[in-house]
Image 1 (cartoon, each protein chain N blue to C red):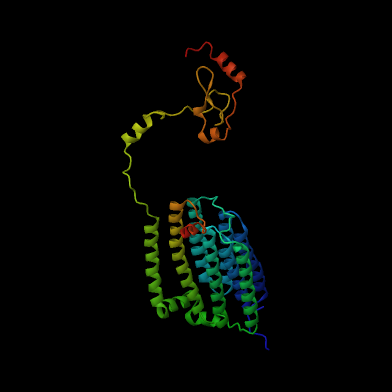
Image 2 (cartoon, chains in turn brown, green):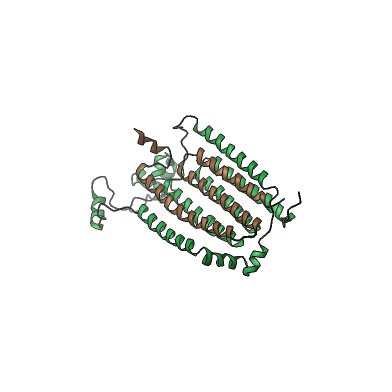
Length: 99
Length: 261
């Protein structure tokens, strides 16, 4: 066993998040999948920091968390606003724009 | 090929497989579960397990931040929004693009295979220097992170401060709803209540004839008939109002015969 396993785990979680974004149609679940992808990237950063004996990776992971928190706040506010006007949280609804 | 220097001991191996497995299970559950609330709880499980993996990876500070920020703040925000948007907002099964679900699944699995195989073969000879030296040089993990954050990365740190304030203002602007009509005053409300179709006072309370106290039992009017007004609306809508036993009504009439009403 070596810490590269953490990076492989991060890759698996990232692809699961990507599948969630591609397959699910509920905007909130799509958003959760994006969060999962961010978390997987964080895990890779932390594992690389440990493999290289360098704390910079952990600092970057911390910044990713801060940016993700800000992104969640704005994204959820947008979802709530769209739900108020459209009464739906499905990402397929905006396809009505093409008519 | 020499064996990489590693402090990956048996305990950490067990932690990796248990927590890593639970994290993957949580991610799978999030994708599969039909209800958004279940998805939120599954992803919270994943995030807690990732926090444990951070601690195992010599990042105790990030582990705590993960628990506080992600499972504590972000996931609870998700649950709040689910309450606002409606818990039963499940997926529509209509595909706007034909075959999109299948193609997405295929592409996602392909991405996963490419990533895992590529990374797995690229990192077989990678070292494991460990963070003991880096942490000891600064006097601890938190101190080391603080030194980097307030020294090398201070500009990025300031930028995140600006970002957080902008996000807070943005959320307030987006979630704010302008009130177009003036708030109703108390006289207006009471007038509305007395207008036709309204009910001026309290409605009769259910089950008042001393045989039942369940809310699905309607109150009795003086002539022995029942008053549907006394039963809560949802029960009436579901047709769950209990029938009154005529024997009970007769018994009460017998009991109150001599009493002046």
